[in-house]
Length: 130
Figure: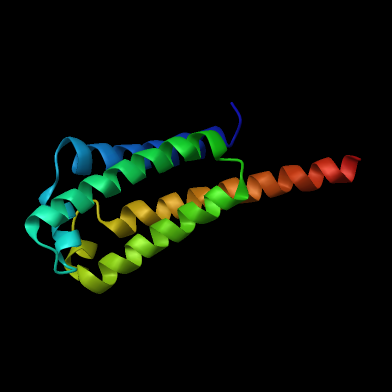
């Protein structure tokens, strides 16, 4: 098995899972709490959460097919870093709970760094042979 496949599957499935289950199939209270922290009504927060779920599923699918592209790995790193910063600023109490953004986002960022490194190494080896 190609060393890039486990990070590819883990990152893709994490985005798809987090879009589907706590946002689209059943809106988790914590998800709605995060959007409500901007001052939106409950109804608006609900639809923002649903929209975020669609975006996460689409990003997960895109990542699955485009994982070798540097830009999608940088988007993954930026999005996960931004979401972590958002929680740190607006919903700090979520950082100390079970399965918190620190324990999910940082490993996914690390896996994108692995993909970036592996793809860069392949590019360098390919050009050294030529």
